[in-house]
Each structure stands twice: as C-alpha cells, then as structure tokens.
Length: 344
Image (tube, one colour):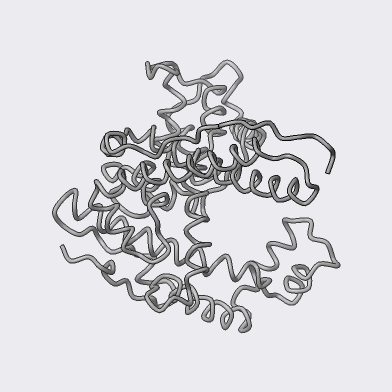
C-alpha cells in the first residue's frame, strides 16, 4: 500500500434507461442510430480498457474508487445504448427478422436499418456495393483519381486544360477507373455542398472519383457480422455459421485443385509480400493462403445474409419478393433459397 487513504465519497451511477426514453428510441432518425451504433462500439472498447485499468490498479493496492465508478458508469452507458438500439430494431419488422438469426443482435440489426435504404436498393447488388463487398470496386482516393484523370487526358489530346469534360468523359472514367456508378459520380461532380447544380470541370470530376464508393461504417458492420457467424458456427440453432463452414470446405477444395492460381499470381505481381511469410509460400505454389480462404468463405456467408435481409425488406416495402441474386444462383452451383424464419 502507498499509505494514501481513500476518501469516503458517494459517486452516483448513471440511471438506467427510462421507459419514456426507450419509447423515444423507436422514433430515432437513421443518422442518430448510425451515431449510436458507432458510439456503442466506442463505449464497449472504453469499458474494456477501464476494466483492465481497474484490475491493474487492484494488483498494486492503489485506491481505485473513482476508476470503479467510471468503469461502472461506462458499463451502464453501454447497456443503455444497447437497450435504445434494441427498441429501435424491434420497432421494425426487418429488425425483428434479423434478430431471429443466431449471431445477429440488436446493435447490428439497428445498424443495418440505419445504413440501408431499401428504396434505393432495387437489388441486393446495390447493398453489396454500398457495403464494399463488390470486388469490382477499386478505390484509391485522390492520388489514384488524379492519375486516372491525367492519363485519360493524355490519351485524348483534344482534351486541353481549358476544355471541360463531358458527361461521356465522366461516365467512361467512372467505369474504367474503379467500376463506380457513373450516375453517382456525375451527381457528385456537378453538385455543391448544398446540393445546387455546378459546372462539370476536370477538378470536380477528379474529386468525385476520389470519393469512397462504399459506406465505411456499413463495411465494418459487415465484418462484425462475418466474425459473429464464425463464432456461432457450433451453435445447433445457427444457420449462416454452418453455411460459412460448408463454403470454406468448398473453397479449400477449389484452392487445392489450383482454381485460384491466377489470383495467387496476381497477388504476387501487385503486392510486396515478404518471401519468409506463410502467405508467400501459398502464393508461390499457386494457392491462396488459409487466411484468404477464411475471408472468402466468411464474405460469402455475409453476402448471402444480406441477400436474405434485402429479400425481407423488399417484400415488406413492395409486397412482393425481389429477383433472385444472379451471383448466388450461379457461382459455385449455389442455389438461393428464401430467407429463414420468413413467411410473407
């Protein structure tokens, strides 16, 4: 002990979420829900760090009443945010369906509702692209966008510095550079911060091409979904975790058969991979490393879940199921089935 005496002090904890606040949570805007989802995960990390700090101080015998209070309040805050998001998710039929799936809790369910607008998603492909799960999308930021515009103008000598690009130029660059949606690029390049129309210029086009083509928050959420499916794969009531395991076995078999040799060669050609790494040993043999196979299988399970989420949301919104996603009815001879726990 250090000889420092703890002062008798009363530190009131945060109050639990009231019924009125829970009811108000059902009326949250999507922007508010996105903020709360991000804040929840931030608070979760703060709570873990606080708990670790308390344990560390306990071992030294130092006073830690205030740290205890802080850790307790952070824990209460985390639970209150979860309750608010649970109320929001439960107020939506799609949210209730999502929470019926093992591995999907109220935080993820609320996050999906807040980040995906079914009215702007006629197919699940729109959701996949918005979540950064479309492999044809390549985003390199400002440096790559500037280089693409510069190269395009050099290949087209008639495009002098004083000439403004045409809509055709913008569309061609959007498709050639990164598979971006040409309409979205044009809208970004010809709209100011207030949404008012502005002239299309090479600078505005370059800035539009540099904008991230996916939602970073939704992409992170999808990564968490994949991790969750892996964790629950041994649960007898699980669905998507089992599908992940089955898909992984298929991917391993295809990898051993050399079906991914061209991808392995491309990785070696495009990336600086240390020769002493396990990844290099796999690539040099014309195979993808185990971590890559794991990611492929996990990503496939997440995309199937999103296809089912889109199916449910679309059915609720329009009263009819959406077209079956082509990639899931063709790739690897996988047959798309209706969403589990859903009878429209």
